[in-house]
Length: 208
Image (cartoon, rainbow, N blue to C red; front, side, top):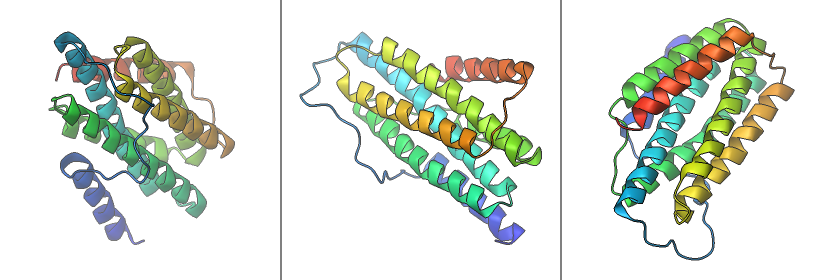
């Protein structure tokens, strides 16, 4: 693609992520049986956690879009695009669950998207191996974050838990694929900075 075409494609992806209703290619994960009724407090807690997860998927769309834009390796571009499609499933599932819980998306989604896109571009400019290493560390941190949500979601909220569990499996696969493609280990200070940035995002998105 020519640079202008790539820019327009990235802009279109941003608009779709932020303002359109995403469509999942895979069925939404579910467990047999019916959810028990959640108390008002449980619904609020579940909705806040799923809003954080939705923000994570907004950031994933931005990250993969920027990294796909940065690489000139066709195989790697295809890998990023495939992973982004799986993240679109996550985006659709978390948005649908927020609707069911009577809640909303983060007011700050445009800010989260812009920040993640910028970090993806910076990582991409450092070369494919560094970009893949950034992806590996991101997915590892997301996997740990989702594991903490499985421990925090109400026990009776089987619908949310099924979604989060499948997302966790997908993120682990993305990390393994990026590592196999040549991702390098990031320096410890960079990993710490990423964790701090993620903590700021998640604690803010929980409420806003």
